[in-house]
Image (cartoon, rainbow, N blue to C red; front, side, top):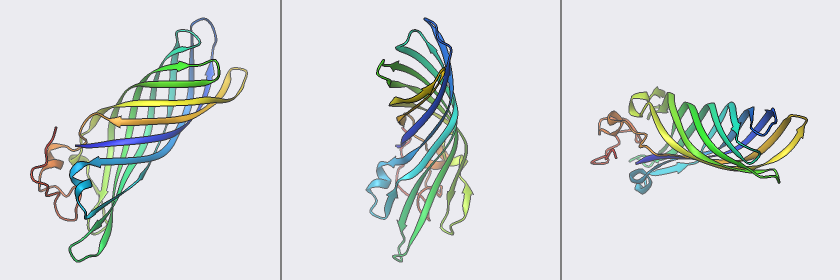
Length: 209
């Protein structure tokens, strides 16, 4: 099973209109490492996984039931990747990069503390807009058919209020995301697909779960 674990360091700029119940919104940017996990590939001594880079930029809109409990919806445009170094039979090595361009829609339950700290968690829906990967000739190819077009994940985050002026503030924190689906499509799981190696991903059988 293939999953992404992505951790992002997030900066969020917020504006709000205060009342007993109130709305707030903001512009956010996240940046951090991403990792693609596949049990068969991780067990293959010819594959050396490397940590990739992920980032996302988007908008946040929140409904605050009070000053503590908030329901947050976001729309983010993001990029994430996975890198491998692969040993070939002739003992040479080549690098393989898999890159995902995504639209992410988290829906989060958030707890805001009077101290300025916050905690958030909830589901996320991801649409893969473009997926590319290198082949043995280091040519970047369209790999969209090898991966699912969309999938679900979960988000966990926490952070702290940094600074503010009137109704505008800045917060910073960490966010971790994890996909609940196998990212590999049926075409990607077949032995004929140039998924992981410079030949086929000949793990027999590759199980879509």
